[in-house]
Image 1 (cartoon, rainbow, N blue to C red):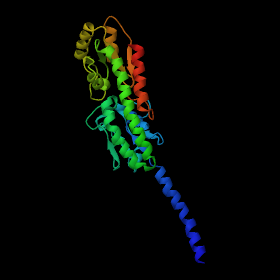
Image 2 (tube, rainbow, N blue to C red):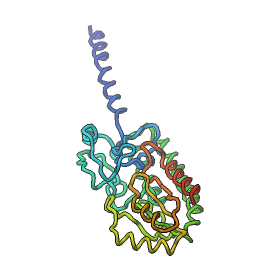
Image 3 (cartoon, rainbow, N blue to C red):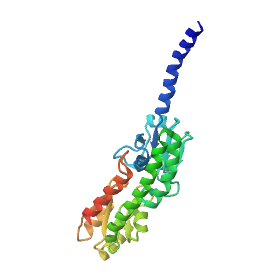
Length: 269
């Protein structure tokens, strides 16, 4: 009789163990912006992230869906860069939030910033997914080395722009270009989430462009480039606008995003 009771209890415990395991494996990584997903991919490709910003969506007019609101209030790991997503109408009750760049905008486009945040993310991911801890530790070393290799490649390409300078539509690449001593003659869109400058600013930029006719024109994939197009059409010597992608796609490794933009530059300079 005692054996039968014990056996029955053992059977009853099996579903509860399965539920516990299912709960553990259902843990998700949610990111506000695709590049954050790309950085995580370099450390933990086994766990697919969920990006709040969908493919092709304008980050300046983001509205969370009801399903996303539910996800944000669950006990999933949320990675955000609040300097860039601070205007989003999201109210997070989740205690597992890592704000990687509260004081830097578009910091994923700066090699030093990515290197500084990789160990922070590796620690958080190891804590959340301890079964992958050793893999994360190995990949962290490789990821940091990858940032150094890519930075050297970017340095070589940007050397061409040091004598020409650039005009940019959106300020996403501003800090990277400035850190590499590339002259930025004008930024046609302010840091205020898609707000374009007025006519006086454009007229001044046009005058500057005529003084630097060899400057590169850098557009932005997910933004209207109409100010840059106006500038290009009025300079008297229309040139090709180089369109860069500052955001990429969800679960696109960060190094692939940066290499893609590097290839776009190399083909158009």
